[in-house]
Image 1 (cartoon, helix red, strand yellow):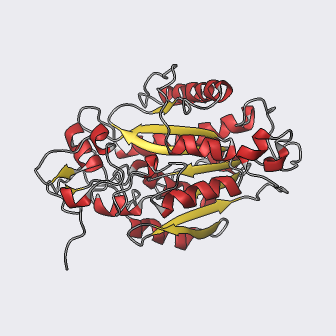
Image 2 (spheres, rainbow, N blue to C red; image 1 turned 180 degrees about the vertical axis):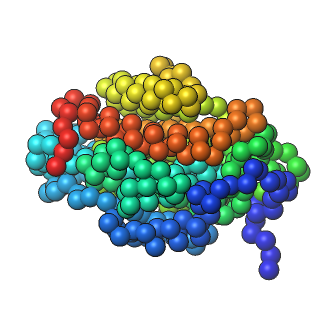
Image 3 (cartoon, rainbow, N blue to C red; image 1 turned 30 degrees about the horizontal axis):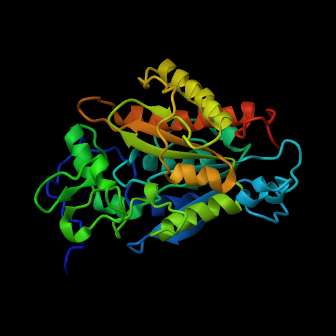
Length: 362
């Protein structure tokens, strides 16, 4: 049988072996969610370009609405409730945790499976209790996409980048042209979709059609059904916040809100970023300093999510354990779960939408 275009892993490197509490393959993710999702509901959000299931786990009741318009129309009207509907005081906010948009970034995928076990049983797969995380999650309408890009994860077979180099991170992220040249982070974004006939290995960024979901957000239409499904979910569920989980070679950090979003959202994100930074620093997990300035005028999936539901749209970057900035598997899992916990605490204490009063919900 012919190999799919872009699937020839030339390096075939071996990182530090992963523990059994680090399940990150599409098959492992599916098995854990199908076996243990009892308190929450599990449904297929869509199929990937390669025909793999993209799962959605939901926990908690949704907020009632009698919506008559989308977010854009409502903001242009005299009544924003045309999108948000009439809500009770202290309604349960909706939080989306989005993991595995880039397939080689396995840290959040492992965290999503561990979070499932915490929500269902109170313990992660190491046996560690997370009572505060479980308590906070119960105050939300919570949506968890454990692996948004199963194609990229299947292509990037290695469980992590622990023990490998930043050059390896780039190779497994963006891939290699047929001439042996590494495609690179910025270079991969010159093409959407990536021309698979010119690629030897397409890394974990794109799906099997060569589409990087982070940038498949043109108002003229999407290439990937994964993108359409995610944005439809954000709109229909009136998502209040989305935490979009990614990985890089540096320390953990919540990045500033989409540059094109209004100032109150930007400032609100900085408040949350400071809280996450301080918590991770207290735990000696070596976070990056919070970036105070806006990051250009780019438009990507978090931007599109903000303009779909008016949500606080967040991007989190975690270290990936490369030799230039080493982290252990335990540290990487703790970073993810602590970030989930601090984000949830912030939403309860400050509300995700700027200007709303703090409330614990019902």
